[in-house]
Image (cartoon, rainbow, N blue to C red; front, side, top):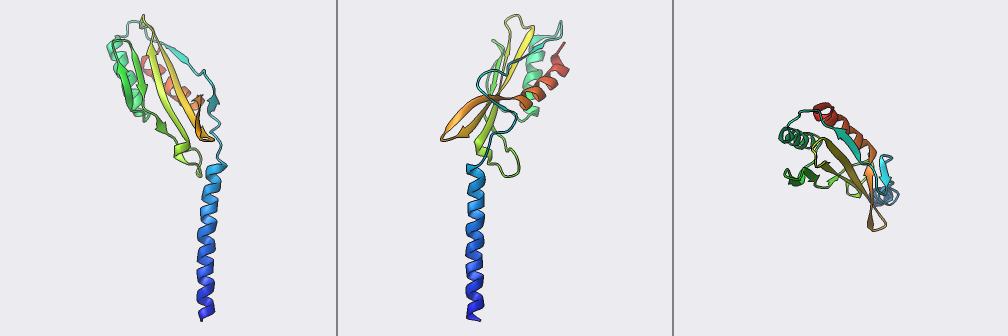
Length: 151
């Protein structure tokens, strides 16, 4: 009987150790999502509907950002600028949400005829954040904004 108890204890230790190693392995072997593009770029422009009131367009943009899960960090209607807080995103079933984050940056041009949209992305690698942008988040946001305020 004592031998059976020892084997159960050893089995429990091996299982705990194995699960811990597998969990750390996914953290160290993690890769950025395929939608992450390193470097600058990713700006997309939306032409606003002619005659659209700027204040209404600005409120619609803020509403759509909220619907996409973004929280506003800087909002300056007088200059037509919105920047959201960083939002962590889980990529894949084994990924750590602390490794990838995105935020939206939106600018109206001075004539209030265009909206420039960019979804910045950052991937945490080797102790530092790698800057870039997210293609899927940018495209999804652009499509929804274009349907509401676009030409």
